[in-house]
Image 1 (cartoon, rainbow, N blue to C red):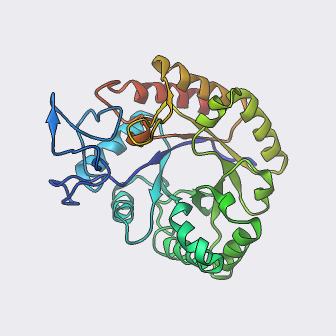
Image 2: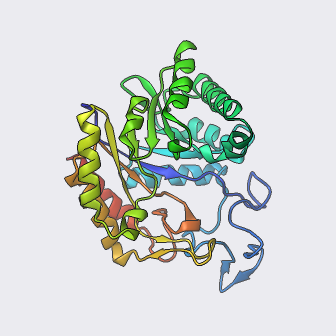
Length: 314
């Protein structure tokens, strides 16, 4: 596949504050973390790090504009918005992002996890829901010039696709095609059999590679070769580190090592001849994977990302 190299990040749109457009706490607060409480100038939030500009509302226009400026500073080509349905806060934020974004800059991460309860009752109904969700999204949003397109096709990134069979995804794609929609599917799996329906593959979080004791280079080289042999797109994932101990017990901690871990991911992505690189994440604060500026790291990861994206695209 001959495609322009891109670097996209995973963007979370589920944050809200009482003084913001959402009018209530969303994301930052849970039973174990009372965000109304302030200690040492910081609110109690369920994150190992603290946003440089403080907790924020994803729907706040000033926040969105600030994030776009920083994304451009990092030399990013677009964002993949975690999407949880039309009634979710993430959809309101998606619409706001599309109103303010540069051209060819926004797509969604279709969170298949939101369909699992429905799937457990009726796979047929769950498949129909995914089809109808994507049809409506493509009809209302995918036609916009601010939505990312690949070879003229609207990009849709799909989370944990192996929870549905290949034939089920083929059914979804065929029905969309019958309706006149030809999306570019980027699926979250390294099972190359899914390339029968997916146009490319990725993994959301590469931390599992570290946990299994394997090297990023070993994994990315192998999967890149397999995907490219089938003429499809390989998107390698990079991550600055990981720390979900505030939201899971016992949780997992992988040190950022002053940027060394992040640079290792980038080096492997470049060596593998990946078509794209996906950054996990812009702002998944709960798992400590954010490159968005923080009190702990300032703008270090914006600058590191810019250095690496420039090298990757050169």
